[in-house]
Length: 383
Image (cartoon, rainbow, N blue to C red):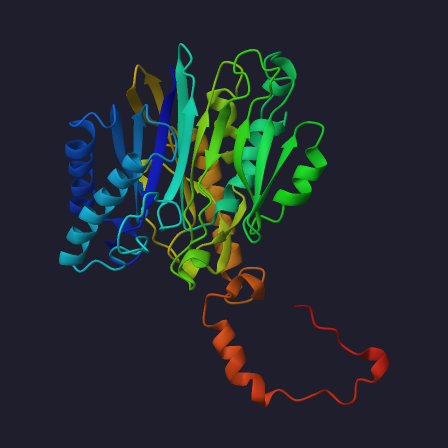
């Protein structure tokens, strides 16, 4: 029998700026999901969590992905939380709810969605990763490391159930296209794409048909909604989340966490306009502070059995990740010294939804042609 794991998240207001969720808002979201979802048997179980200014809903049910009732449940729960946020005068109340009314599917309406429809194994462990102050492409590096890099996941070499590799679904979020690449044979093609993390993002990972434990099933999924494209202006970074199934022919728990043992640079941070280090944190350290960050990732471990969620276990609340945290803080110190200079500040193409285009428009009449450089030294500007 099929089962579905749905993870839906949104920023609906925080305290005092974009730092941390407000407990009464989280409580109202949980109350709604419990009363309208669990107690009506629409869902079989749920958990409410949060990182930074984002409220996160993890649900178990049997209605498949893209189910209108499940999506409406999450939407109305966020609307209920938004009302509490507005009464408290919270900053950014209802920020991610970009439409006035639910239209049958929450995708494209602001909240991020990651869903898996699976055939549950005897033991069905998985990890939900939640990021704040960054973009969907921030998952490219760790997902690649989990499912394609034997230095991070030795099971790709020594586990016969993983040796055939995995299939990756990659989205071009600028042109609305996708491509499927099979690893290890398409490794270099995959890397050629996902290194451009602002455009090409890993959406899903699948087992291959010859996989003995899980025949051609979705084993990882990432939220990929691009808020700036939906809203038409800068309304915050996309703060992605992801679900990764683990064990028994898939990356072990430790292999799925290993990519975060060292910090790496991602886009986002303050005003979504700066590169900064990704820092793995436990739930108790999920508040955004320095320069509205640094960007953070949290990992909650679950087991699904007969429609019930057991957990979560706070996977990064361990001293084993202290090195990565300290490394991230050192990287933050170094790159912050650069102020508004690249590569700390993002390139012009990624600043489209900030004030930069208006500044350039204002200064356009003041620009003068350079007369003394000679035709042979004509400067060709990159658009």
